Every structure is written in structure tokens, then in C-alpha cells.
Image 1 (cartoon, helix red, strand yellow):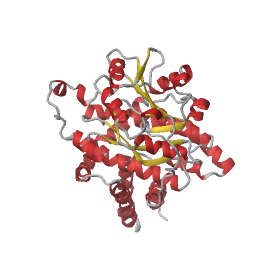
Image 2 (cartoon, rainbow, N blue to C red):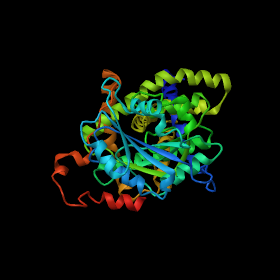
Image 3 (cartoon, rainbow, N blue to C red):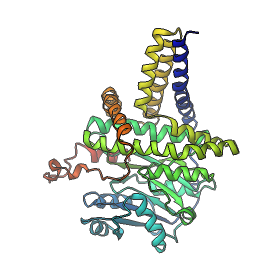
Image 4 (tube, one colour):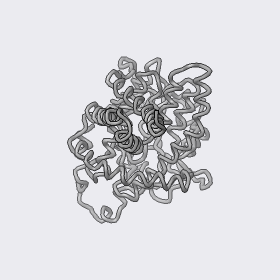
Length: 417
């Protein structure tokens, strides 16, 4: 075999591995059934909302939690006003939550704030059966707490992740495309991983743990992607995160290029750091025990972002089509897998037409995203958390006082929930 064809074959094998893994998850997702005990009495839940300078958003989040169908006697809402210099704590209290203020400029970050509450203020949550974590710019569905309670009541479940979707899909093509991405990444991936015996993983918002896990661990993860890190720590201790798509939360996504670039560099840079840190112990654990959950964790860490994977498929496939007899068929197979991956997410999660239409902007997104990886390669991953500006804080929105001036987002949220 000529050297060029051998090289193409080797590259194709490298790209085929994550593509095949994704295909397995797509097929498995259609077999997913959530684990719940709907007959169990409601658990006592403590909902924790970490917040940093969220005076514009926190009241709506608290009111959304209070408006769930869950019994008021079975839930408590605690807002951590973390290093705030605005009225976050006051707004949270006025909305009906308990607010506790933390000032520590040396230990900044969401994970640090959560661990502070869990280790220094156990009196606020230790009498509950479960602890729920929700971001400060979040709206939840009516059944959110009921579904998490039903999940944690199942004997196999001690950690659960709800579906985390986009609250503002109509704000821009970026947010609509984010909704499409989360239908895939926050539904197909966790559902498929649970079916094949893996962990769904935490997504940072809309998750819950049995209280005994908080007693045992606190919140031990402090990286930029502390949610994924905690999931991996639990996985190494044979504790799986289960997925419940009926427990729905909606968070605001970045609307502008600068916001989105900042978010994306943090997320992807953090994931790269986790790959370096956790790939060796996961591989060692898999070789010791043979547990598929650890192998799944390895694959999940090694799968590149969708834009990079599609870019690699196109680059290798086009070159192979010119040099190898199998190149065209291989490329078509890869692209068909990606099309099935995205379509399955949008179909299973019943996304609206605007989200489907956003796929037309996917080439723009890929062209925007690729340079970010070059920047990360030169600068290294982000090491500090930076708060993303919310839509309500932008000048063009701060000047607007008319109710309902949100491009239809509020009505869309209510309909979705």
C-alpha cells in the first residue's frame, strides 16, 4: 500500500473512533428510559442558587422555583450571594428565598461558593433528603422539583441531571444554534451514555444529589468546568449520574460574538485540562476493573467538539476521496452519522422550527469556532472564571421599560415548559 494511502487510513481510523462512539450514543438514546419512583412521597429538597452580581436575574429565578408544583413544605431555596457588590441578596430575599452572603476575593468561583456553603453552613441543608443546584439566570419547568425528587427516590439513583436548555433561542442565530447544540449535547449524549452503562455527567445547571453525597464530598471540584470534574470524581468512585429529561431548566445563552467567544474558550479550555488530568486515572481504573462506565468516560473526554470533528471528517474525507478508493464512501458515512446525531437530538427533544432553521448558520459557527482553538493552543486554557454579561444588562435593554420587550422569549419559555 502506498505511503499516502497508509497515512490516509491511519487518519481515517483516528476520526472514525469518535464518530462511531457518537453513532452508538444516537442509537442508544432511542432506548432511553429515565429511572424514577413516581409513587414515592416527595423528598425534602434544598435548592441552592450560586449567584454573582445577578440583581437583574435572581428574582425571576427564585419566583420560577417557587412556582413549581412542588409542595412548599418540602423545599427550601438558598441563594449564595457570592462576592456581590450589587443588590443580589436583597432581591433574592424579596423574591422569597433565603440569601446568605459570601465575601472571599481569594477563593473565587462557583465551585468554591458551593463548597463554602456545604462545609461551613451545613445547618442550612443537612436536614434535607437532596440538594438541587440551579444557576442564577434560570427558569424551570413546573415539574422540575417533582421529577428530581422522583429520580432521587429510585434506589439506583443518588445523582441526577435534568435537561438544560436555552431560554433565549430567538435572540440571535447564535442562541438558536445553541439550542440545537444542547438538544444534542444535553439530551442525546446523557441519554445514550446512561443506556450503555455510563454516567450522564453534570451539566452545571439543573442537577441534584442525595444529601449523603454532599456530606461525603462537599463540592470538591474547582476548575472552570467544575460540573464535569465532579462527575468524573464520582465516576472514579463508581457513582453514576442519571439523566431525567423531564426535569427541565432553561438558562440564558450568550447573544453576541464576544460573549460567545469568552464562554466557549472557558468551556473548551476547561475540558482540555480535564482530559489531561483524568484520562490516566480513568484508563487505569478501566484496566483494573473492566467497567464500561470508565471506558465511556474516556471516550466522552476524547470526543472533540462537533465543529472540530466535522472539520476533521471533511479534511480527511476529501483528501481520501482523491487518493483512496474508499474515501468518498467513508466521508459520506461520517457526514450521515453527524446528520443523524443532530437530527435525532432535535427530533427527540421536539425543538421548534427556528432551531431547525439555525442549522443553516452552522458553517458560520464552525468558521467562527475553529480560530478559538488556535488561540487556546497558543494561550493555554483559562484558569479563572469571568462572568458573562446578561442580555438584560446590555445598554440597549437597560433603557427599555416596556414589559414583554424580549423578542417573544417569555412566551416561548412558558410554552416550552
